[in-house]
Length: 222
Image 1 (tube, helix red, strand yellow):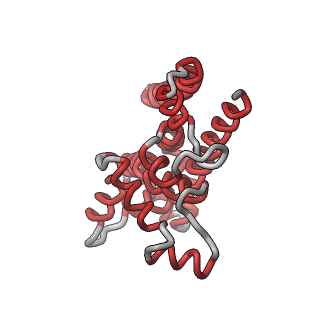
Image 2: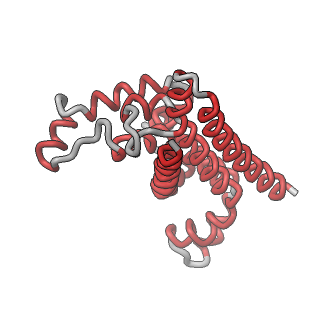
């Protein structure tokens, strides 16, 4: 039982870390585009990215499961040409977690970039800095609170996710079983001691992350 407990926490942490890293890499260019670019379908893109914040997790999980199924087009394509199955695998819940966590990374980054004065970019361009150098050397260092908020919120949201992970990955020990799913399983089995251990760990992690976010933001305002 103890080894299963540690194994579940390991899978949870691995998913949260991988999701956060991928979303940070994806979130940087996307947030920059949404903050400064102007194009006709921008509102639709922002709406799609924000959908996980209002859409029931089981709805998105269901559609991702259908897409990943080898009986349907995308899943059949992956299995036929790459011998890859995403349904009920760690890779599948990682992709689902990235999709469902998009707004928790992108929105803080976008809001941070939009809060910067326009003159900051203009001065950098005037000094001969390219857009890439301006982004990494001028803009990003000035939105550290937003970066920390995005990373912390993404990580905290991922370790607590239930619906999407359960729909796409099921409940396979050592592969797709997350701590949030284990809490439900143990509570159903009336094993409240183990359920409390999982719950307490997730509670403490979330509390620490939120404390960091509020501390950084308060220090930045001061």
